[in-house]
Image 1 (cartoon, rainbow, N blue to C red):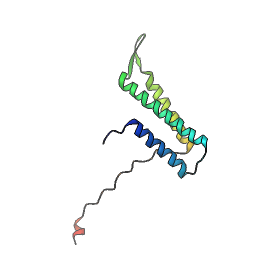
Image 2: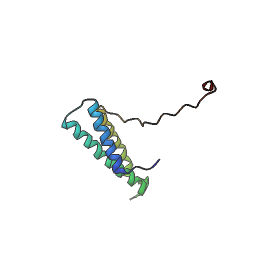
Image 3: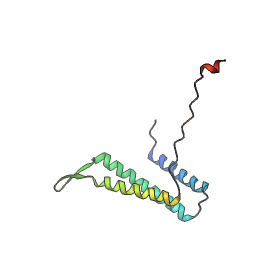
Image 4: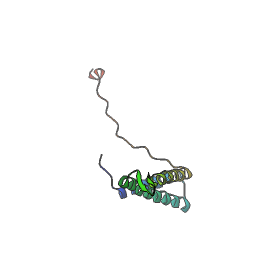
Amino acid sequence: MAKVKRETLRKRIEKDLTSQLKEKTIVGKHFEDLVQDYLSLWDLKCELIDDIQDIGIKVSGMHGPKSNPSINDLHKTNDRMIKILDALGLKASPIEEPLEKEKPGASDLI
């Protein structure tokens, strides 16, 4: 599976959330603003993940190694993102996979 650029993925998420709002006939600038808040948190989440990958889970502290603060921030950010989705009444969309073709069986030969 090819890696999708972050900006492309962000646009897909925004499109998906706005289309879910339309499907549920949820309208109003307040809800559109919440979608933008969600996307801002998504950007922050990506930066936190990058920081954890670059620095690692442990950083040097005054008295020795300590946990990277980005880990705790990532948990808080994810929690806030979930609360926004709940407030909007939205959920993550399932990945649509192509249907597998059934293999012909012995009874199909007749």
